[in-house]
Image 1 (tube, helix red, strand yellow):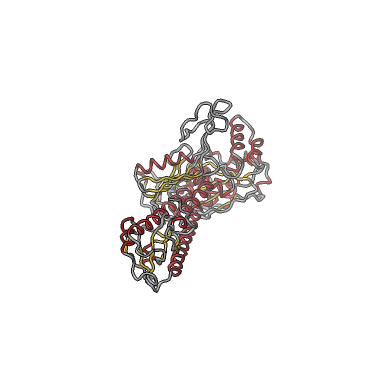
Image 2 (spheres, rainbow, N blue to C red):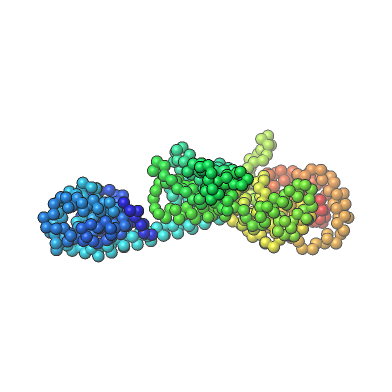
Length: 548
């Protein structure tokens, strides 16, 4: 049978045509398979229609080609040629040539499994063809709407704070199957959707290996087998001049079917080794388009981002490890002045639960409102941190201890990001990166306490800038000496002063109980022998805290 040329439109179920009351079609022979579909309609009165069929047609005939006295042999040969050409069904028109469908034709269609439809005299063949195209257009429009909605859903998922799991979840829901992200080593990094069985999981993992780019130092076996000895340089799998076999190029996608489940694998990015695997029951032709869009989004989320190539970053890391000056290493990363960004996941109270950092023997009923209690915020994963870095315009990302630190070139002004709370330092040279890191941490604490998505450290001139830095540091060390040896006290004092003495906001910023803040501030007042209700005292302490 010749391979049918499939049109770029969804096929029409034969039952949908039979359900059209305006056509009045009736099945008189052949199987009643709901899976039978029609790809187009074609009219022919040729005794042998095989050369004129592409496959998937509803062939329409009024029986003009049937000779007088035709017997079962003629009809058997006629139906067999339609089946051999891949015809989907035969429509036989009544009048003006035949008043009824020939019984031998009915028997031949039943014998060879070809659906036979009776077309009443009132229904023209052009009307049947028009109905086929109308149903195709409706199916195509529904498919386009479905694909468009899926695209919007995937784009929205990619903009969430946890973009990779969100995209996989959205894709699995759309396909009613399972979506898996495989890492460069072949391990499953993230997955979403219902489990489809161990056999399917194993087959999907093997299919992912087919599209994963081969390591230049590792030869991937060719499914066709080893090359014969003496193969020339143009033969796939031939040895290179260095004696090492050249790796076989990897396809960008691959597909398979296991136990009725459609499998597909898509290589992500520009050869970084990430692979998207999809397993779902066969449904619509638009599913491949949706999966391809998801693959593009995941490629952007898992690939290398802006802010310098991997080789440049690797060189910068090596130089720093070997004692290089950050001021000299910075040009490799693409900028002379930088900002440090500290970010923490910002979630709704309904998505978390209040934490209680007090020891069991000191706990008392918590009278704070839910808004004033510190929340247990889930730590961002590496992929979510990478996506945040991409949104901020930098690949220099460090996720640790629930905080994501990003080093951003000063030319890129960080903006608020949905689902994140950000603290941004002033623009500094690499020599002042440690100070900028401290600025970003304080800005983040202030942003969390005041419940704003973004706080930028102020760089405006202040009165204490008139005092020489060395004198200011000496004064700060002397003034704060009683509490300097206890970081918890200095951090609490600094945060409390920055939030204008608010107990609840300080507790939120430090993730401690409000009573803990009161106890620490009281301890500071006693050690410093100072009245912290005096604004002058607060101002002097604040200036001093800025220099330690």
